[in-house]
Image (cartoon, rainbow, N blue to C red; front, side):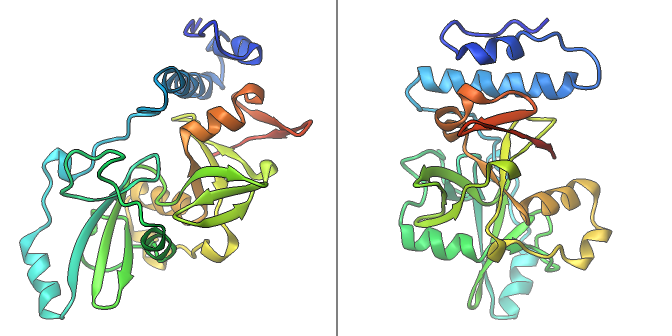
Length: 248
């Protein structure tokens, strides 16, 4: 029995958070419970750190290969390296510490940068799953989850990047069986065909491309503020209608 329910949680969540973790759904229930636990802790701490984002490669000691940098320069291309955390915050890789005060905030930059995100199918810096090209520059991007993150909700639309929005489709929501995170489809104009080279990639890279090319993570604080009262591990109630969550 998982007993991490908090007294202030919505009544609907108690029966799921304390649900016996048995059978096929045990992993999903456990991941969902952990995610809600993180969300509730965030609420109590006034959104200072809603979900701790995985550390970037740079923060784990990884540096770009100087030989690859030189090869790009011989082609007249400059390379820059970015990290996107689970809250959708964008950082230069060498930014330290990475928090709200040090992330990019200019709406025009965020719109331009994030609308151009695509899989990094180039022969350079394959450890970076994504890139955002800009003229003679290639911005190589690491993301803690999907590169596009929905961070707000307004007038029936999910908000992303600086000023971008997409209609909210509750019947299309997805949940990760391993992390309990909630996802929503990207706008059709941003859904990207998976590069044919993905068949040669390792399973983790291929899975990251498939998810990031079609789905955007919903920021944990947004899940808490908009959905938590009517959310369980396999469905959500929105405006009186229950919608099943697709497992991804």
